[in-house]
Image 1 (spheres, rainbow over the protein chains, first blue to last red):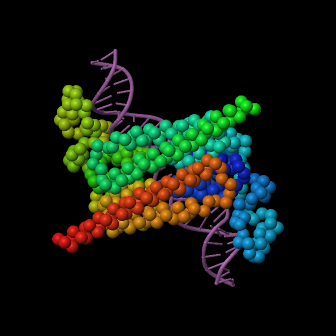
Image 2: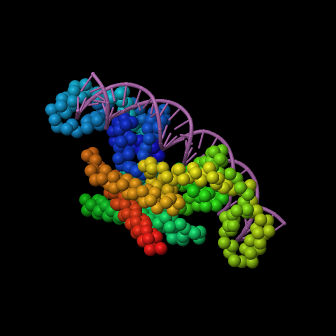
Image 3: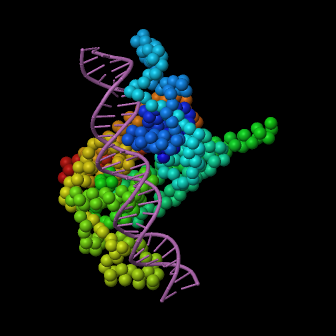
Length: 206
Length: 206
DNA sequence: GCATCGATATATCGATTCGATATATCGTGT
DNA sequence: ACACGATATATCGAATCGATATATCGATGC
């Protein structure tokens, strides 16, 4: 799971641990607060497996991450100039990783696997599903749709036991949320289909 | 977290592991698929800590869990009669646990703690917040509201980096979901307030 | 009767993840 | 000069997961 996320980000460009964590927390937000205690071990795992490797920063990365958008003050400019001079910002031995071919293969495999994803896994895969071919992507979204539909069906028959008031509220809210999710996925699917038809038509007319 | 959930359920009545897992998965649903690999160790932890203890089933439990609502056929009745005769269904050495005073104290403490809950923790606490006094319950709900409001504010300023199409969709959906959650909590809070006022009025008139 | 299947039930293992903590550097504000 | 907050990596023990093993029971089919 973490490995998929890490490989997905590193496939774009080399990054270091802190940066990976920031990106992922920004995007996955409250759904998954990744901790360094899992991230750094994961990086070492991936490195041992030959999926990623340490790279020289500044070589490949045009945006050195920590640029921070200086406040525009004179001091800010000076600081930026100093940064540029030193070439390597290097806050406490920064270690950037890049993805290898082996890693790319691994990523493709993890992204393609058709298991019954939980909320997190779905979110992570969605984040990278732009790298799937249209057919696989549609299948991925359809799987999610089926899953949510199934969940709604299960929610339909309320448990026979006595339900506390707050429990009932939670259950009802969950059902509404699932419906909300379902509409969202349905929209995504509709868009995908529209585009695929569009592509075909263009292809035929060309 | 698991401890809070287990103690909360056992405070109602004695239960065994499998049953606990079923109840929790039913209610927390996709948010938290508790595994036996965490449940059984948790039970032993709690037992070691003197928060729960093995109890004789059938002694306290009027509903033997596995009642299953017989199909109404003759065979079903016979099976039920056999069950009743044997008194102890006992599928593979079933171990039921009951809560102790120590456990009740622990539960109260876990439920009352005012940390910044994640989604799971909030759901679990909500499940049991009926056992909080009205003031503490309102405070709990208000904390959640503040948290969600804060999250919306954070979502407001979109990252400066380039965002992939699916990432954007995910982000937008997350914001909508948070709004949805916020409305829900606001409703719960409104209800609480209405009732507290109602109680005060009744008390004054009595 | 008997075989088999699915639900019930507990247990354990290795691997993953979490949460807290330690440490260090850098830029900024005072 | 100093403190502070953001950046950055690392590690530890504990909690959790996911898979697997094992056993019993009731129901279904032959």
